[in-house]
Image (tube, one colour):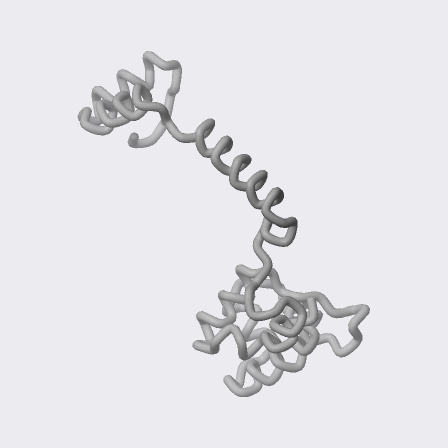
Length: 145
């Protein structure tokens, strides 16, 4: 994770530029202040890093671009101009296998034509009829459909 190697100093600079305390940032993104302290930790052994959701949340709430926190040059040097995607680094066979797995998973999860017709008919029913259908199926919901 070379692209995060300077995250602690970049994050602290961003925070100070916006005149925010560690407590302010913690409240802003809904995390414990101890986590913010660990993001800024100077000791690499004690430091931790935000997850993607937290990282994006910081950027959105401060109006800062993502590259203000990440060392994208280090990432490019490590991977070239294109980010690695699952399957691509394994050659053509790996990509074919990844795509086959994806297609198989989608086919199992997407409704077939009969299920789509049933769903469409269910959605076109009023709330009372939807409740009757749910009761017939043994699904008892407490709230609105």
